[in-house]
Amino acid sequence: MAGRITAPLARLWMGRWRNEQADVHGVAEALNVSRRRAYQLRTSYLASCAAGSQKQWQPGSSGGDHQACWPEEVLALVHKLLSADPPANYALVASEVHRRCAHRVHRASIRRYALDKGLAPPKPRIAKTRAGTRRWQRQNIGELWQLDSTPHPWFGSEEPSCHLLNMLDDCTRLNTGAQLYERETLLSYLDFLPRAFLEHQLPLELYVDYHSIFFTHDPESLTQLGRALRFYEVNFRYAPTPEAKGKIERYHQFWQGRLPTLFAEGGINEVAPANKLLEKLRSHHNFHDIHRELGSSAETAWNTAGAQKRCVLRAVPKCSWWPFIWSVRTPARVAEDRTITLGQQRIRVDLPKGKRVVRCQHPDGNYTVLASEPDKSKHPEVILRLGPAIIYPWSN
Image (cartoon, rainbow, N blue to C red; front, side, top):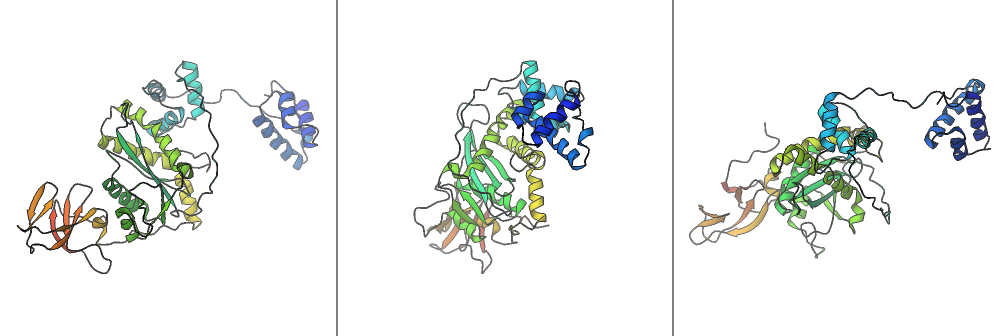
C-alpha cells in the first residue's frame, strides 16, 4: 500500500474521517482499499492522534505474499482431499492439514489454491432464511446439552446407511458425543449417553425433540430412557420445532459435510472403523477448530467457563445400579419348566415357577436377570448373567 498511496494523502482522508467530514465508504474509495483495511488504518491513525504524533503518522505496508510455501506433504494432502469424491470443503481440508501434518492453513488459502488449480467444486448458491427467533445460549457448562440423531448416506450410498447420534454443550459448543449406529433405537441411546457422561460428567438437562424414545403423550409418565436419566437427576427439555435446536442441527451439517469425504478417502464403509476415526475428528474439532460465534475453540470456551466457575456438571456417582440403568429392562416370569427366555435362548434358573424378575438387555448384546427394578435404597440382586461379568467404569 505504501507504494500506491502517499502518507500526506492518507493523513488527509483519515483527518476528514476523524472530523466526520467523510465516512468509511468515501475513505475506502479515495484510498482504493477495502472497508476492512480502512478501519485498520483508522485505528492506527487514532492511536497516533492520542499520542500527539498524527503529523508523522504513516499508513504502513499491506498486502503481498508474506507466507512461506506449503510443505510437499501438505500440498499432496490438499490436492488429494480436493480431488476426492465427494470433494472436501475448504474448512475440512484446513482442519485435516492441521490434524495430520501439524500445519496451520486458513480455509481462505485453501479456497485460493483450489481456484488457482481448477479444483474448486461447483457449489450452487442456496438462499438461507433467517431464523424466526434467536435463543440466547446458556451461561453454564452442563446447564443444557442438545441431543439429536440424523440419518445420512455416510458411506456414499444413495440411501441413508446409518444414524449419527450427536450431542453438544449449549454454553461452550463442545461436542460432548458423536457416534454412528446402524439404527436409532433405545439401545443406541443407552450405549451413547453413559459414554458421554463418563467423559464429561452429568448435565442438568438434555434438549430433545418429540421422538417416542424421549416423549410420551401422558405428561405424568416417562419413557424408559426418561426414567433412566431421572434416576441420575437429568431432565428432558423438549424443543417445539427443529429450528429451536439450531445448534445441534448445524452440527449435523458440519459432520455431513466432512465424514462422507473422509470415509471415502480412507476406504471406510463399516461402523466400527468409522467411529474410531470419528472420535479422533471430534477431539481435534473440540480442541483446535475456531468457532465463528465464540471466536475460540470449544475446549478453550469450556476451560474459560470452568475457570469462571460457570459449571453445573455433577460427577457420575459410583452407583452399583449403573450398568443396569443403561439397559432395556422388561418384566419376566419364570416359566413352568423353571426357565427364562434371554434372547434366542431359554436358560434354566434356580427359582420357583411364576417368580417375577427383571430382564436386562445391555447395549453390548449381553443379558442380566435381576430380582427387582432399580432402587437407590438397596443394591442390585443379580440372579443370572448371560455374558462376561460386568466391570464398572470406575473399577481399578
